Length: 236
Image (cartoon, rainbow, N blue to C red; front, top):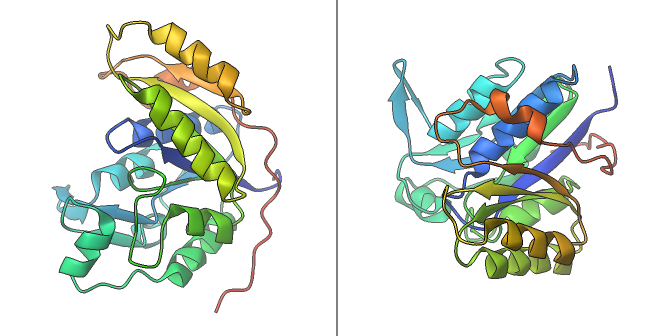
């Protein structure tokens, strides 16, 4: 088995295709013969699929992965209300415990070769009053992949997100341009501008393809190659 590696996948906003891009990354790793899983530490908004209450993002990650690791590990916190996690958790009187997330990550780390941890909403979206994506990424020592939703305003959103990542001494190892509209004006000029401004490689451009399965687009993505192996830590 190859050395285990993992990344934290974040986005410029909510609703920009972060889960879809994460699934494409999973399939790109699987295409290299690597046992790969996705993880959604905290998700809000549930539905009933095959008689089970599940978050749609978590369901997509589960379907994309090499095997079923159990929802309690893939998605430790599944909150009912489709609102910001810190509000959904408050409604259910649930306290988000980072240690529970870290234990689930450590367990998955023992069972796969590649792991993509998807955040909730944009990079700075709160998970609780005390916890957010930067804290999770820092504690797990995960480099970041930024999904940029290509739409009007994306340049500012992307540069601000990258600045927030780097100002917290986190590593941005690559970014993905996810095209949201088939007729966005100056799409490729926007992508080229960001490519010049980012000190991280463009891993791929995903076309606006609402009916295409993520495995069909895996060949468009290059996996980051600079991440350092994760060393499992002792958790309480």
